[in-house]
Length: 467
Image (cartoon, rainbow, N blue to C red; front, top):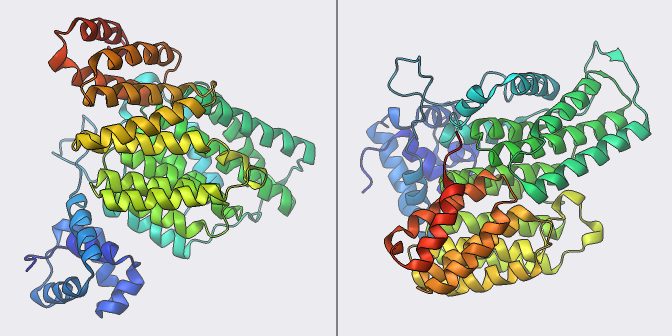
């Protein structure tokens, strides 16, 4: 029997059953306000015996897969205590969304976010590394807004009249494409401030009266720019800032009626959480994204399946991982690039292979038998990858070198490692630097081997913290 049920346990059970708060309340006969209180207070509230027995009954009736998800969700529901402001005397802090993040108008959120971001200096930006919202504080407001949110691309009352022409809108749409292409190629947040400035300009246009179709297209541009800034911020190590821009992208996309791009932005949030080790939260976000993807093209659905597989890999569920990969392969086989939106164009056969290979490599760290399959997929990605995708190419090449290390092929691993470093030197991506540091640490036990020592000497300069 699962003893001492807490609010966090009840929320973990609800997520394992795959239902929203209202349906969970109806199934269990518990008041919706009580279910919300359990989610809000988490581990700080212990359920009375009657409710504990009720939860135990529903857990007993769950399928084996649902019980496994419950265990995983329960383990992941423990609150991560992130560092607080140094001036705060409290020992810990519970990170939550700031007031208005899910209730204010998109333009107000964009105005405050871009103004604050453009004024940040380097020292303040370093503090943006902390403060990522996770667990119930992340998922409950997001679920509630997706169910009941009322954003629309309509013109609020009281605006001044400033008409934008079709040609100007098309120029803004092209600018959004250029910035995304730049990030896809190089990574590392290059030109991030320029994208923020463009986002701020588009948001300013939305504060004026525009015809409905012009307003809708401007809102789509706002969503695209916000998602690009989110990715750039994440790739620069500014995790909290990235998360807020992802939320802005989701809200703006749905305000413009573009649910596939909202799904894409939710998938971006999920990928960030996977990077931060929050696999259960990420899986919940992927499921919310899949709910928004009913009208998405096969390529978008394939990408979402790889995010799902990614989460299963982190949760050490290889069977579920391979099933999700199979579904992704089925979807990508149906893809038709001419009908795909431009923003999913990066997700081709090379990206599919690289993503699957990277996840197999992560599982190989615990189960070395996966290393061979990982190397096969990553090799395919390298062969198919477009030469101008430097960040992806660097991650591919580092991954293949790591796979050979796991297989004990030191000479080949070092040869591949030197080739990878030539690509690493061309990108400022924080994700690439993190991967490089991981490999540097894993070669320490064979540092006395001459070829390994030579590789580590070259790596040491790149993994050193900047002054």
